[in-house]
Figure (cartoon, rainbow, N blue to C red):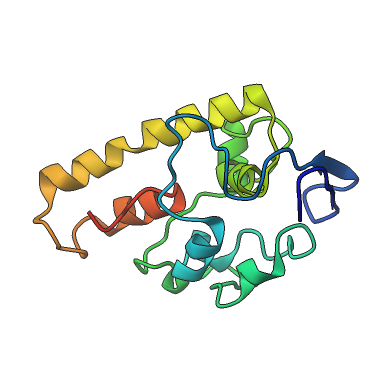
Length: 168
C-alpha cells in the first residue's frame, strides 16, 4: 500500500466504501497524536476479545494478522490482560461514539489513519477521544504499585485497546 492507493472496503459492516491513502503508513500523524502501539502490535497482544476486525483481512495488511489473536466468537482469554473488555457495538452507537465512515469505532479509525487515510474533522474528533482516554493511566498510577500488572486489568486492557501504554 502506498500514497495515492485507493482501498476498497467490502466487509460485514461496510460495502462499496473507498478511501485514498494520503500519507505513508505509520507516518505524518497529527501533532500530539503518539499512539504507543501499531495496530499490528495491538492485534498480536490481544484486544477486543479477538472479535473485532477478523472480516477485514481484505482491507488491512495481511501481515497484521500474523500472530494476531483472532476468534469467530468473543473470548476474553484472548485479551492480553484476560478480562472482558468490550461492549456491543449497539452500545457504542447508542452513546454516539461512532463517527464518520468508521462503523466499528475508534480502532477501525486508527487502522485506517495508520494506513494513511486522512479526514480532517473525523481525525480531529478521534484524536481528541484518544487523548481523553489517557486519564485511565492516571488512575492506574494513583491506585497501583509500580510494576503490578495485575492491578486494574480492565483499565489496562482499555489503555491497550486505545494504544496507550498499559504497562505503566
